[in-house]
Amino acid sequence: MFFLKEYKAKKIKAPDNFANRKRIMSSENKNLIYLLNKRFFWMNKYIKNKKIIVELGSGNGCIKKIIHNKKIILTDITKYPWIDKKIDMLKINLGKKYLKKVDVFIINHSLHHCANPALTLKKISNYLKRNGYILINEPETSFFLKFIQILLDDENWSLKAKVFNHKSIFNPKSPWISNTAIAQLLFKNEKKFQEYFPQYKILENKLSEFFIFLNSGGVNSSFFYIKLNNLFLKILNIIDNILIFFLPRIFALNRTIVLKKINEIKK
Image 1 (tube, rainbow, N blue to C red):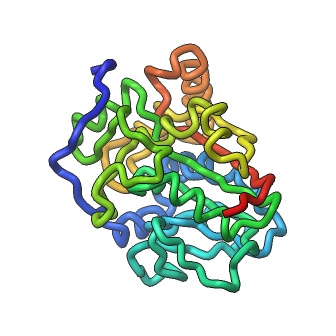
Image 2 (image 1 turned 180 degrees about the vertical axis):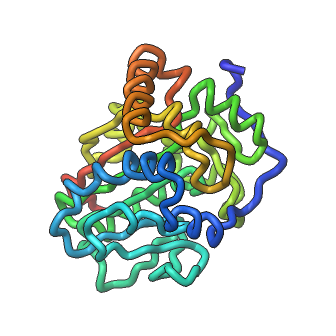
Image 3 (image 1 turned 90 degrees about the vertical axis):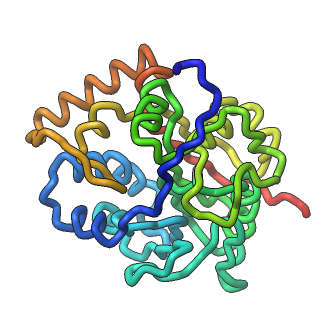
């Protein structure tokens, strides 16, 4: 399994974002809130006092529960009641008034559903200010993520995908088809990424999450978890950090990336 380069799931389906949002907003599951704080709280230093912040692929819209800046514009390909703008990540049609005006883009576990991630990053640059940021959380295709995906049979991965060629790597008509290896393919080799995207500089590129995710009860689906208080969750997080430091290819389930726009690229 460790050496498998790709997998095609047979049980792909849309998440129940109404149920997931209700479950998250209730704050009953402290394990899940701890996980979401870990995924989002660090972003506050990049978006503090910023005026225009756009999240792409907002899904259940849980980010506003954690982030201090409530000006975030939530976007998604599905117009849920809490979504501010219906946006396709392949088109990013925010409108002329946002050209070179957006301070921060946030992409949380949605880039791997984008059939052409290189095109998406290029289009983001049209709207992002110089010295603006892209804050990204994405799955990391480690041994255990492969194991989980085979077990659940609900998401694809392919380490063979050519993510830099500006062509679709899977059917772009379905927003629920995915390749959870996209972040790994884009950002693991930082030098290669910079060659293809000289307008961006990678400020952060780190791996995280194992037990903290496995015992969270789930973000986009609900599964069994053992309730823990804050102290034990912190201990679990320390254990995660140790495991991932020594064996990242085995345990890491999440990759966090921060991009800063440093140049304008002539078309």
